[in-house]
Image (cartoon, rainbow, N blue to C red; front, top):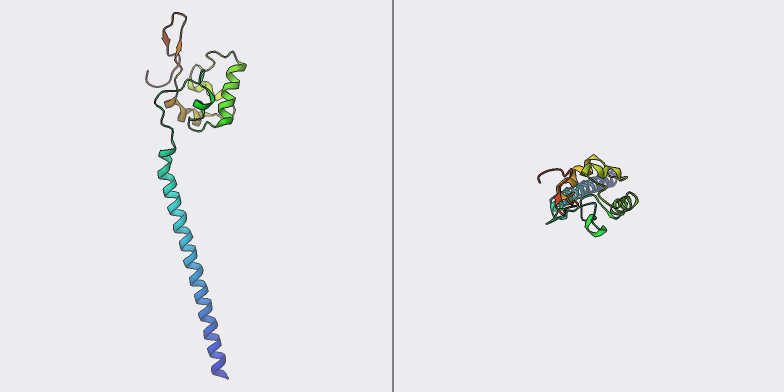
Amino acid sequence: MEDTVTCERIETEQIKIESVSFLLAACLCLVCALFFSLSVFQNSASFIEPQLQNRINPNTAETGSLIRLPNIGLSKATAIIDYRQNNGNGQVFETSQDLQKIKGIGPKTVEQLEQYLTFVRKDSQGERNDNGRMGNK
């Protein structure tokens, strides 16, 4: 009888060890999967960034052009257009910093947008003006 109890204890201990081993293996698999998916997502971020051949003028751009900009979704693009329409529909944005007048656009977003923006306009003689444009002319 004592041998039977000892055998049952050994079997119980083996089951516990197998269960713990299984849980450790499952956790290791989850950690590896998470690490892999994060590294793939980080590498794919460069593919998501918009490839704009021409700079966008926020004073004249339509919604479709604005939403191609980093961190500008439909709501911010609509807010930019609404701001333009409510504030004279002309050259309301002289520099990229002026976009901070739009709710949800702060200094970090402006910094990310600068390389994609232009503020070129034609003056009364039909010549191009780069009033307040940031970066290279």
